[in-house]
Length: 174
Image 1 (spheres, rainbow, N blue to C red):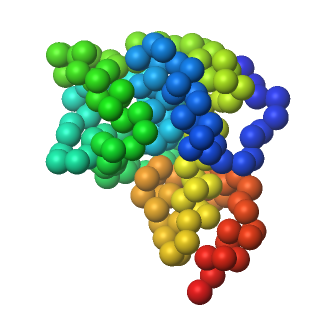
Image 2: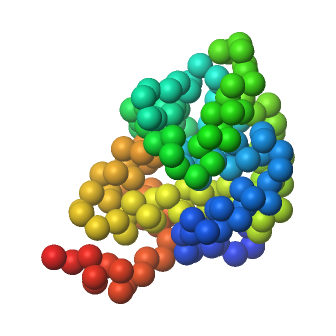
């Protein structure tokens, strides 16, 4: 796989994600970015997902990623509010599949990397961003939320965590 020359440490902002979606015209690529941004699966997990692993439950789009790779834990099905940016595009893309056993993104890892490289990011940057946001969230549920969402062990989480804003942390202290 292509290596990234510099590890991006600051989590992806909503604005940057919005810009990526606006610059992406292909619905399949847009759905792929939405999947990575919110559900943060590994590339191999993402390209092996089938239609039957997604369903709608009220105001949520639910994904059962199943057994995570690289000794990670199995996560409970992940619920994503449909109102989130880009989720409607993912739902629209899912609607193009009528066979529940079809793979949603029949691409290889190199293609996934190339899609990301167009925006000077790499696939793991989505995971780093989500974990960093969980860990820096006020309320003290960061580690448990990151573990529940990603299935990663606590030692692994520290490798993914990017930079956090000390002022934000200070302002969140009770």
